[in-house]
Length: 63
Image (cartoon, rainbow, N blue to C red; front, top):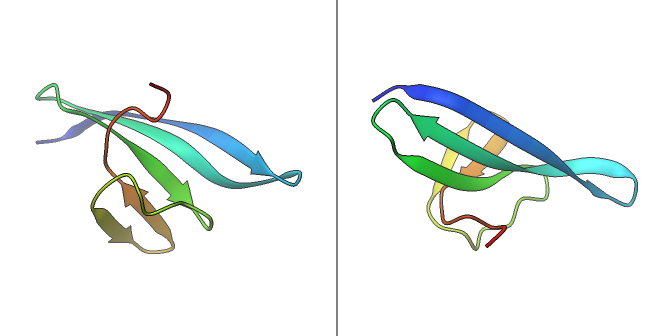
């Protein structure tokens, strides 16, 4: 499975972008939503640690 696209939308907190909403699409059609950044919440699902960022894969947070 390879990542086809990653889209990140910054969310500002008190004037600074401290986290972002992420949509990942794979070549097999899987779509995952999550958050990255310093203030990402841990309520969307499993956490994958990747260097300085946290990626939480879950359902569409905009629904």
